[in-house]
Length: 108
Image (spheres, rainbow, N blue to C red):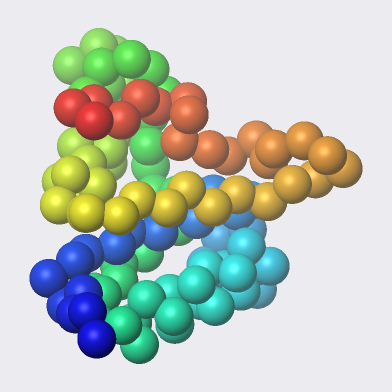
């Protein structure tokens, strides 16, 4: 059997619901993360709405007028992942308003 214990997966949950509110997107993440964990993959998760992520095109938007931006700290976790899963709800056939496509993944 192949081993995957040297892999790191990061799930970014783009639900509109802050923690600890129940999220259907979180349920899907948990199902997928469970499969990965059974195979030895180290799994990490970020719920985007729980963080102060400034929108813009620069890696740290505090250098461009925003009072705060957690993205630089979160980006380190993204860059450390071998597997990146962006999970977001679909509302009436359209993506939710909270997503990381507002902030580019610098260095990817």
